[in-house]
Length: 313
Image (cartoon, rainbow, N blue to C red; front, side, top):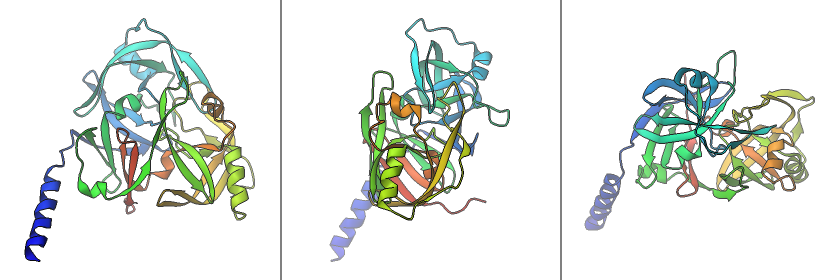
């Protein structure tokens, strides 16, 4: 018995020793209306505020940063940017190296968008999937800290013990590129969602809402229409939308019960751009993750979701 216990202990110690050190460790905060915001450098200069957007296939920069660094045109094709209520094609520029500590997206060629201002302030850019897919990103909700591991490196076994949500890499169109979706249940109705930390709030189309309403009679609709910030920096042409809010009593993904949540019910034009208007669909936004620790692991097509963080002072 003693040998078995000791062997198990040695195995655990050995397994833990295989966990790599993160190549970057930096704080994050919630800013600009509720986005996950980190400090980045661009071509060694900064720090600049970048928001984390898993609903954007490319990292982006804003005019206020371009005015400082004067990025040259790439001479390449225009790039389509999808937003909640609008989309457009934009010329691309040679932005250079975008870095979070030692984690770097080298020689980025991307678009420059009009500043997205909240209280007269604008972030300087967006960290998109072209950056994030190369790393396992651990968001420590207790410490408000982001740890970045290379995609193939082992992470702490404690994270591996967290509940897993499966992701699916979906090629929506030539315009949108590969984005990641997950399946969730709104009350008892199954709805496919785009994982979109660039959406400050969770959005569901009316078909998805209707399915959820039919499955649970106790859904409550807000008594009036409210003006709600879009929460997507990739909407370059408009940053507000008239939408109705609704309280969903239970949201589940696999074994994870996210509890009740207020969502925005809106047939956003992005759903047409993605070709999903005829199915229950939504954007699984940053609001679902703000009080959680979690791991984004796109190489393994999964999210690992930890317990709720204690209230930060």
